[in-house]
Image (cartoon, rainbow, N blue to C red; front, side, top):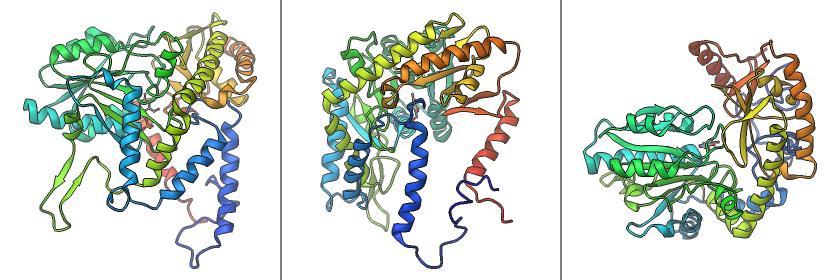
Amino acid sequence: MSDYPYAERFTVNRQLPEHGRDRAEILAELQQMAVEEDSSWETGQVSGSYYCGDREHYDYMTKAFGLFGHVNALQRDVCPSATKFEGEIIAMTLDMLHAEAVTDTTPAGIVTSGGTASITHAMLAYREQARDDRGIIHPNVVKPESAHAAFDKACHLFGIELRVAPINPETGIVELDAVANLMDDQTIAIVGSACTYGHGVVDPIAELGQLALSHGTGLHVDGCLGGFILPWGQELGYDIPLFDFRVPGVTSISADIHKYGYGLKGSSVLAVRDKALRNSQYFYLTDWTGGKYCSPGMDGSRSLGLLAATWASMVAYGKDGYLSHAKAIFSTADKMKAAVNSHSELRIIGAPTFCFAFTSDLFDIYHVNDFMRLRGWRFNGQQYPNSIHMAVTGPQTQPGLAEKFAADLDEAVQYGIERKDEPAGSAAIYGGVSGGITDEVDEFIKVVMADMMDTQQSLPPLV
Ligand SMILES: Cc1ncc(COP(=O)(O)O)c(C=O)c1O
């Protein structure tokens, strides 16, 4: 029996099939995989990732995608709709992020393929602008330790030094003094999250804005996770500090439509206070034999289907749609947090809203994870200290789910208490939690993870 997915049921393609296969048969095969895989999150027990969970909305976006999926958004003369979709996606996002508060510059944006892409585009833009305007050739960026790994990746890719400020372990938010101490005249941007991936808490954006202004540097707010839901939480009266363009000093914000904007995977916006920042990473090659080449971001060809589906998602929800979904998500999160708080053995980190992380000072919280996994729950795991998080999404708002979470958690806490002197079976791995990876030496973990990535991209050996 092979570990390779579906090896026992469907053909493994080691080469192109000699003769093309019947489309209906292929679609039936795909349907089987999709239906089975969807059944894992449709229970509502999976944290994050399936933000909307509404089948009708998925079908609707797929139709919108299908109308344009074959079109290249580069070729605007044949597809003027691309300009309409892209311009309006950016405008609607800027409006949600209160760009009307900006009076001295022209706010703008760029549509990217996801959170990591929005963050990398932002870092590239800061680097380019700082070199041109401030003559900075050894740029650095200061991020809170909790800010997403995409910042580390971007700095790695673009030769930017990354300086990391610690977070307060109780509140999960960044220590301002540490940020200030790490900044110097080569700092091109500092970072704050609204909210953080790990703990779902909002960094002190107003204070970071003041720091940025006093140093004449940029402040990127990572709203990849929270950008499309926190604004509605604010409208609902939740205690969420301002993090958008109303805050002086905020120069760019990443906000993912493929998360709480409920778009298809592959859509995010990088919004900027000043169009000049966005334009600084535009690329031009005017003397190429292939013609005068210019591109607004790192991609070349892009599918117009995604732009169409993203636009279609946003206008189908509208403000009232986003608000009512946020209401259900926030109130489900409130119930789940109350369940966690009912156990003195558990501790929620900081003051989170729709996405919360909890730990235990009595036992390894991964015991709770081990038990909850047996009951079908899939959380995301963090480390230093170990904690697990639940990003509440549409599927969790179905009736009875918050109550099931509370009941299963009661038993999980007992399970943890009984094993308080033993190591747990699972550990943190980004995007989920995993059995079999323990907190060993860094180099060893890299070997294990490289092996995992290789396996994910390889065929099984021939037998
Ligand atoms: C706060 C935050 N920033 C960035 C990202 C990266 O987004 P993506 O996975 O779309 O690249 C995530 C993903 O969960 C996130 O939560």
